[in-house]
Amino acid sequence: MSPVLNPTAAKRAATRDAYGEALAELGKQNPDVVVLDADLSGSTRTKVFADAFPERFFNLGVAESNMMGTAAGLASMGKVVFASSFAMFAAGKAWEPVRQSICVPHLDVKICATHAGLTVGEDGKSHQMLEDLALMRVLPGMTVLVPADAVEARQAVFAAAACRGPVYVRLSRAKTPIVLGDDYRFRIGKGTVLRPGNDVALVACGVEVGAALEAADLLASEGVEARVINMGTIKPIDGELLVAAARECGAVLTAEEHQAVGGLGSAVAEHLAQHCPVPLELVGVQDTFGESGDADELLAKYGLDAASIAERARRLLRRKN
Amino acid sequence: MALTPERKLALEEIARRIRVDVIEMVHAAACGHPGGPLGMADFMAVLWMEHLNISKENLHDPQRDRFVLGNGHTCAGLYSALAHKGIVPREMLHTFRKLGSPLQGHPHRNADLGIDMSTGSLGTGLSTAQGMALAAKANGWPTRVYATSSDGESEEGQIWEAATSAAHFGLSNLTVLVDFNNIQIDGEMRKVMNVRDLRQKYEAFGWHAVDVDGHDVTAIDAALCAAKAETERPSALICHTTIGKGVSFMEGKAAWHGTAPNDEQAREALAELGV
Figure 1 (cartoon, one colour):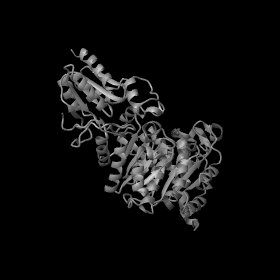
Figure 2 (cartoon, helix red, strand yellow):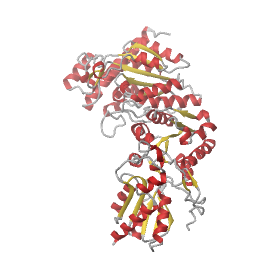
Figure 3 (cartoon, chains in turn brown, blue):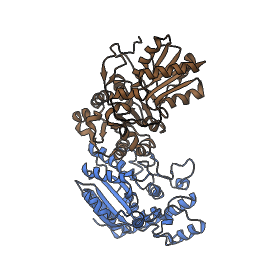
Figure 4 (cartoon, chains in turn red, blue):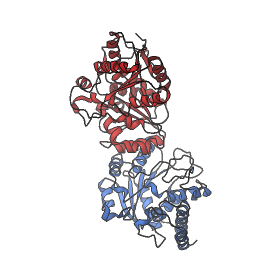
């Protein structure tokens, strides 16, 4: 087992919980950190920060566009601003002020969006944001992070605060397996090989990293050695690691809790098509919206569980030669 | 204290020179938005020359005042005001809207030129000004934040999100000057989409709000002084203006929102402005 993997994979935690705790710690270290929320501080976990530093927390109410503009104004005055809401509203409803007021002047606003993807579960399609990576990735100068688990989420918060310019951090509501060990070190722009293998590369982000590791186990029982890569940064994408994987494995599968177009899969396809074209398989939601249901059942229904990834990998291997 | 007669004349002269710059800039660019900044020239002159604590000397002082041009398309007037303050080099005005110029067709934030926020998409400016005012208040700074807006921009929902929260946060260091000229791109505001009485609206949102004759420099100055005296509420000055003010054939005409004068029209306009 790779040293960066968590030896007790049964443990679960939500990335939003790791976010709230990291934010409060960051607040202690850096007096310039301010946090904004749009009436969801209990759910996004910014309440942990708000309770510790009430004078540096601003609740904008149910007004996400105004929150993003306010974040820009605060950042222009030298504050390091974290702005949170559900991914649907942070990246969706407020996209235009994020573009005009935050990205155009390239301000230090860190958008930490929770409740992304199908794993929102029972709230259904109106809240299951599956297009945020596409919307954020296309913005010039925006860094896009998708932590695989609570371990990576915690480190991503500190990394976002330390980097200049706007950052989008995609977080989840559901308690998902902790796949990374305590010795894992997150760096913006760098992916990590979690499992060696040269038959096929499984490149995943977010909750799909755990699923990809499970899929690799399934494939191993059939004699297929899959390389599993955690791509915690979608933008800038780790092109070097991707080209090495494409060269050495000859086939690359991507997996994400997002539309199959526009997110990780597209970022990988864009890079490899130009630098090392190999057969690709993009696992994601297939041009449809989600629905209400249990998170794990939804991942299975929409083809994002380990069994689905393994099946798509088998299909990819048939195309490899 | 009211403006002295000399100061009143001096501000009216600055407003005239802003109008001249606007015509020359938009004419040289052969495109742009002359009508709005002609209408706003009087209150921009009073704000920039009499009230805003922004100068070449304190440009990088974090505690200085801030300005956000919410109706960003009127930026020819802002660039002219910055030139009158000696912040934007006068010769740079001729590069307005041209490739490579920092004087973009809509303002782009530029710390060295006193352009405090990127604007242009209507509705976004007031929220950013609110963020600046919140930061200043949280830091205990004397900074005052001024934003402009317009009757047309008041049709954007985000304006009212910001109006709600600025009052909620008690941002008495924030003032918005609303250019109310009853003209928007598609015609008369009251026919296209009537925003009705903005003073009453801002008041209902919890602001100190007043109607002002947007061409009376003494009245504008007095209203800005009253805004400074507010200790609990943000202030809104509903500045009633005429689009294209000072150039007879542009006055009151929606067509001059975003059309550049040709050579002959520019000559005529400049002659009317005493050039």
